Amino acid sequence: MTTLELKNIRKQFTNGGASEDILKGISLSLQKGEVTALTGTSGSGKSTLLTIAAGLQLPSSGDILFEENRMSALSAEARRNIRATQFGFVFQSAHLVPFLTVEEQLLLMLDTAESTLGKSERTQKAARLLQLVGLEHRRHAYPASLSGGEKQRAAIARAVIHEPKVLFADEPTASLDSSRSRDVMKLLLDLTRELQIATLLVTHDEEMLNYTDRVIHMSDGAMARANSLIQ
Ligand SMILES: Nc1ncnc2c1ncn2[C@@H]1O[C@H](COP(=O)(O)OP(=O)(O)O)[C@@H](O)[C@H]1O
Ligand SMILES: [Mg+2]
Image 1 (cartoon, rainbow, N blue to C red):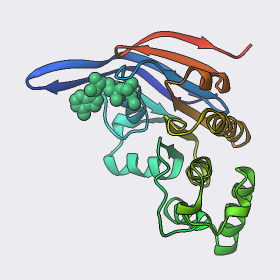
Image 2: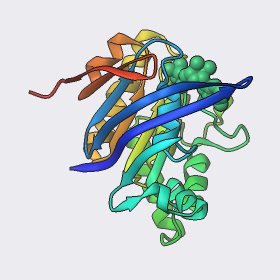
Image 3: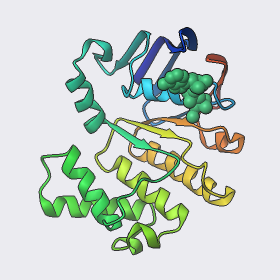
Image 4: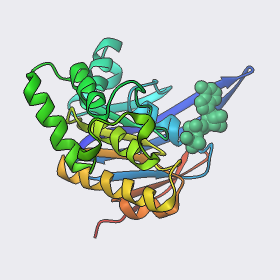
């Protein structure tokens, strides 16, 4: 089932008077319960496409459909609301709040995205998710005492605690060694299946593509080829 669809996305930037085509008509769809990878060399337009898909910046032309919503037809406020409640984000660095414990990072996210749950339900939800990402023993730890892999797992738990429909992950393993990178990718794939999220993963690490369902290769702002890894 398609959750998010991009149709013929183009993006131009003007650099010193000259206009440059950074994205040259990209179409793709993200499916529920699947990880779609965007890969390609640095500068090929992966992050630009991810931020456009997430509504963080607008395309020069083309359409983005999230469920029944055409994103370009919505107000900035409505787009912000969809981002806060329906989307989750993970980046290369974990961006944890230094003075909050792991559990508090998750509860803060629920405060922002969810208004219906009571206090004890929120704590239970955080505990369940920390168990799922293998951090229950680090519940009361502050970011400074976590390893790189633990920080990224906390960031992933925080990104999905409000049960987003789409998860955007831009190079989430780029600052980890290869064994921790594999663990983080397995976790992303597991959560995508378990919570039935449509995940868009940007990576330039070929090995990480083994943990994804579909791979889109980008080159110079265009789709070079797309592989389905599903039999
Ligand atoms: N705001 C911007 N203004 C001008 N050029 C930009 C802007 N954002 C990205 N670019 C250019 O777009 C190209 C693609 O960048 P990016 O999407 O970050 O690539 P990737 O994530 O694949 O490394 C690069 O040449 C970059 O310099
Ligand atoms: Mg990038």
